[in-house]
Length: 337
Image 1 (cartoon, helix red, strand yellow):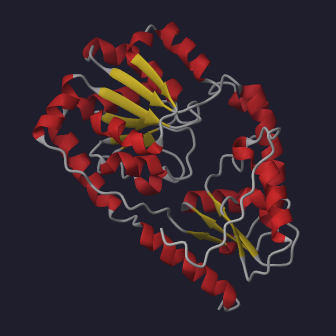
Image 2 (tube, rainbow, N blue to C red; image 1 turned 90 degrees about the vertical axis):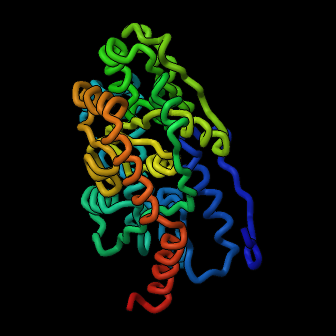
Image 3 (cartoon, rainbow, N blue to C red; image 1 turned 135 degrees about the horizontal axis):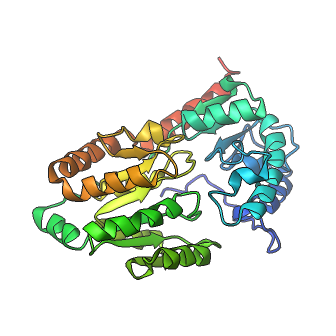
């Protein structure tokens, strides 16, 4: 990376900050630093981190998700899907109120999908024209698969889930598919990569379902090593309850994995059902099991989905994301013309 002409000013969240990523205390750290900066525009790479900013320099922020904009004020809404539903309701309530104020004062926003943009616009009463969709891009090399690798993948099939918030990513419903799947595919293994405070409860659920021996909770894995797990897996499954976009789907496609996602949010803009993957409704255990079985046993379907996944990757290059962001900056410099 060429860093010529860049200045880096390190800031850190408070060790007492319990918000995810420490975004709340970071907002104050950023605001303090910005006081001494002369700039034409400020870009908060996480829009909610603009919370403490009160300067006069035009500021924009990036929306990576719409989870809090979808917040329901009835706490029992979360009871069926989350074991930590009371804590989750309290935290979501706090973030919803806080980020609403932060985003309303920004001069503009970028969103990782049209779904994210529309949800935030409606929930926070922000004009849709102030939010520009800029899809995230990645320069991922498509690594062709060969017959030998496919043979190894299907000899002892591995389902893979990569994500931090495992309940929202659909781990509960995946676990519930396992008892029936194991009767037909007894060699099946589920690997879960990600660190989350609710992993212990997910292990208890796996034990209750009688599938704990076939589930591997791998915890946090360094990004540079995750590629190996994608490569050895047989199928990538993430039937999220809600999803802003889902970069992990692109990572899985690059390694020649067929994918299954939730029929929600920005995932609908990335996965075309039956073409480059499958979509299932949140919580639909039966359909998820059917689709997993199809992608592990129907070799022609599997091959077609993998090839279409490679084609999908070409639509999301990093340079396109950069160009769209530069265009957005230019629009501000020219007064929105």
